[in-house]
Image (cartoon, rainbow over all chains, first blue to last red; front, side):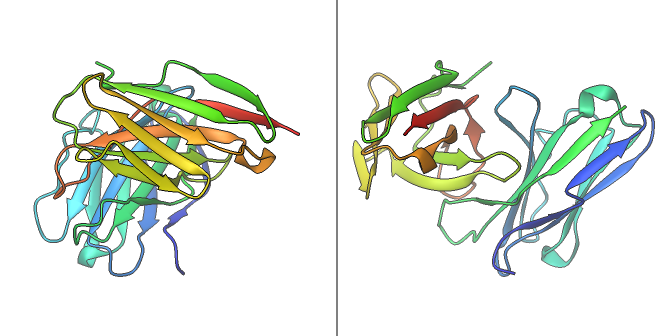
Length: 114
Length: 113
C-alpha cells in the first residue's frame, strides 16, 4: 500500500450514534492530520499528530470529537453522539515529518448523519 | 475568519488555453503555499508548492506565482487539458516544522475539449 488509506469509505448513521473513522498513513510517515470538508467548504483542520508528541487538537469543533494514534501509525477519529452538522467528508493526511512539507491525502470517509 | 480565500468558485477554459487560478491570504505569517487538485470521490492530490523566499516555481505545465506584498498567489496551467478538470485548492502553512494547512474554499476548473 503506497498511499494513505481510510475506512469506511462511506458511513450513514443516525443522529446520536457514535462513529469511528480509521486512517492508515503512508508507512514511515511520522506526521498525521485529520481534516474535514463540509458541503461547499474548503478543508478544515481538525487534529495533528507528530511522533510521540502531544497532539494538536485545536481544530476539533467540540468535545464530542476525539482521535487517537496507536503505535505511531494507525489513527482513529471518533465522533460521539453525532449531529446532522457532523455530515462531511473526513480526510486524513500524512507527511514524512523530515522537513518535507507535502501532505498526502487519503480518499476520505463520507459521513452522513440522518 | 477566512485566512485563505479563493474568490472564484468556478473557471471554464478551452483546451489548449491557459488556466489561471487565484488565491489570496491575509495572514502574513504564512510562508509556505501549496496547490492541491481534487477529483470527485478522491482525496486531494498535491500539485505544486512554493516557499515564501521565492516568487515563482515551475513544474511542467504548472507554474505557481507568489506576490508577497499583495498576499496573492496564482496557479497557471498551460496548455490546459480536459483531464485537468477538477477542484483546485490552495493551502498555506506557517513554518516548516509543523505543516498544518489552511485551505481555501476551492475553485472548480472545467476544461472544454
